[in-house]
Length: 279
Figure (cartoon, helix red, strand yellow):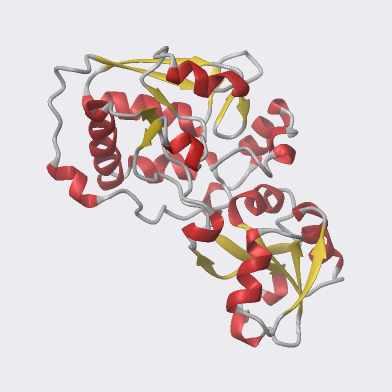
């Protein structure tokens, strides 16, 4: 998962985001589906080569990694990095870098792992290896609240559905639900606001970004229908990057992710940082 399309998430003030979390209702969230490879549990690593893990991240990507009003580095990724180190029982450091320098810092061996949503692009794949996915990014429909319960995607042939122009989600609708009349918007926010105003019947797009908007619009709208996982369209989701060939670190992190999945720690972090669940 890269930074493209996340400008409006970054634009949320950290203080505002923190306040939103404080007053949100965690009961709206649901546990994570399992993404990590369960076979990784068999690969208990030798910890001799990695007495510590030096995590790199950024400080401008709420709710994943950002500074709170006191200046402390916090977020889903920060908590996850700490839990990984605790599970493996190794020392852990977390250092924030500007986004445009973070990947280079990892390449220069100034850290062992980058937990900041680095895209799994062809260019990055030549330099880095990646952990298994710890947070996938499904596409979902959003409707007005009164339409959620009876929603059926296969009954949308006469409905108008908002989607961001040129997006992978527009391509999904064209390929898998060609009978839908799509109404394109320049941004996802514009499409969601069109649902709220009743100008369209539904919206389809990135579920996680929609969850932030829904957190401020709970009385109006909600997720409807199932979550659609299409990594070839929507991306592989969030992973942790390591310099290519650093297999001991990668194996240790993958092993820890399976353990955190099995003991419920990943669910706990998800419920904490995403009050409106997007699965």
